[in-house]
Length: 167
View 1: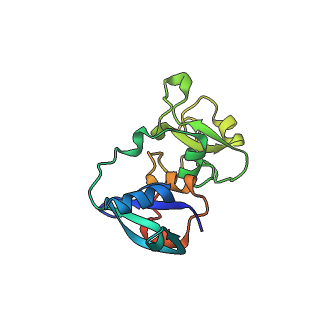
View 2: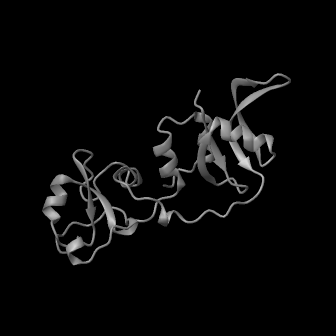
View 3: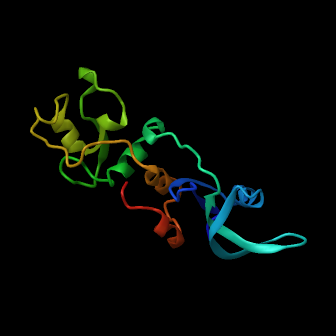
């Protein structure tokens, strides 16, 4: 049993993971409804109810696009499936700038890819076309699933119907 709860927007889009305590507060204030319950029961002096695993907000929350989310090595690796975007290797991973910083490349989601150290050294400060190293998938800002998988690596099976595999 995890003490983390998946939070869905009113449109059933996954937006966050929160603590069990926060989820209970949202449900009791009628700001959210419980979609999936755990076998564990929460008790008070006068009542008892099943602990929530998945809740849905009763109102729509405008979530800013994930372009502005904090970029980290782990998030880039997770977005790229923990494999080199040039050769597919899963060992000795680094972060590579598609347009090198020496050529004005920024540290943004659409300019960072996962690369093994061998490919990163081979590419050096060249563009992928100059190095004849095509990128397997175009870099882009990740969806909320990447951040949810980083927050809860061993997520409950009851979350799976609510999480799409399109990362």
